[in-house]
Image (cartoon, rainbow, N blue to C red):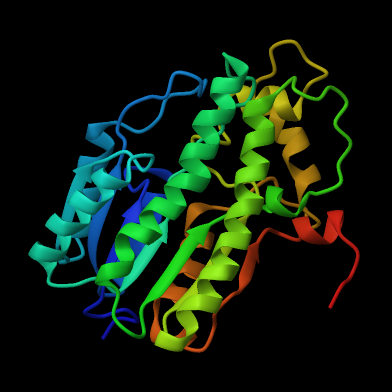
Length: 286
């Protein structure tokens, strides 16, 4: 018996990166999957997003573990699309037990600037709200809601040298902070039904988002055209542990725990999988 045997998990942003990792890891532990992804680029996001072929590969990997999967293209910014996707998935797989709101973008330096703000907030914050709210009518008592935040959510009080210069980056941090509060409030209101809600906050994660030119420039602003090799020298500055990044599977292990009955009394948690990033940027508080 797997740790989530017989459960059905709804995962956004499932075509690659952390989303695919979560889908495969949950399938490995016995879950069936409802997987959605945009499968096209967002103009202000200056690195390619997942494709339909990527989503097909997620399907292949899940099915290789003997689990069922319903995979659909859907935009988390449009709640009606998630409602439709969940309707198809639940009808096929027979229910819903776990929500993993994973989809996210990072339009650092995106143009037009305020459109970059809109796109990242609509994807990383509204997309989480849409995924959770679309799922609520299907969730039984004992279900689990999980949202992916970021270590950036805890980097508050940083000086902004040029306000308004990079709304895409600022919007990313804002969305992750607001997501954290949303999950806290969801946990409070779902607790009477024994439904738990938690957020997982990764640090640098070895995905396409991190391995992109906008991120290289963010970590190495001293260089005109930094490479991944240049950025690798700076990536460890984010963590207290001497590592440049974590792997998607490190986050998936936390997701499996929160999806399983092992965490049946764990709710309202802001779980950091961050290599000690929080320790570098915060003093101790109870």
